[in-house]
Image (cartoon, helix red, strand yellow):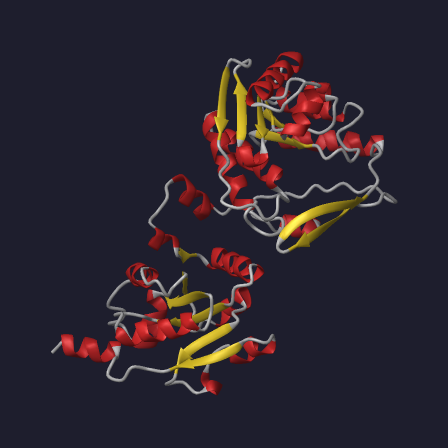
Length: 399
């Protein structure tokens, strides 16, 4: 775990180990692509006092070189017996803001924190007040802000969105839910805390940071498993592009789409090429590819890749233009640009059910054939329209 965490850019792992203590094991039950329930196997008693002391020292050192301290309380025996209060005090002594994801009924241990991010149930437990309506949520938030000197409370309300109460409870804002569909809520609360803290750290106002957190949560609950909200996905929600441009994706995003499509029972197809000047032959191939699957991903050679394959005078159109033209076709569901000479590195990410190439190839010449067939996929050689060629078209244009 230390190696995995340390491998992330800008992250320093400071994992503390207590010998003989059972590591929490969470078992999630999934049916038809949606999480139904979770069973935990764990020890939730207080950690050893010496371990708690070390945790406070580490957090105090970290507070001196960071902007925001986050306490994510899982009620597993870590932030108990005054540990949370000591961490908050150390952060505030360093002039840092504190964001807390709370648990349990005793919120006094978070006294003085700048931001609390409960869900509706947690808010009700902490305030010991009803939270069925928006007005009740606001009243409970105000009570907690006054009782424990919190700076603000951001309550997540599942399919109803979020409510932010701040400035001593004077200011209130409700955010509608951003999720298009909910498949798995794992990690949604962590996403809210992470994006909110990042927004605060960069100087965003609380309403703007909260809205970004709401958008990010809406993205991750639409994915299977513990997922992340990627920058391009958040930018799309903040400033929506046209439906055409949304089809142009990075390889990480298109891999997530392919996995979601498969889980919904769709067959995923893949084909690739330079598609420099789109002609009827290309359209005919793409139509055949789409007819063989439910969702079609097109791999597009980058400009550098086309130059290596076709010569220094190609491509005629840049990759952005070529991708936009492909994405405008109804037969195409996603376009991903790749820098390599072949799309082979994409195939393990996409695991297409159907791999499509033109009939000018033999089966043994199709890159990735062995891999796709190894898990039960198939290769389709699409018929070609005679007399259509990008190279011939360019030659005619040049006289």
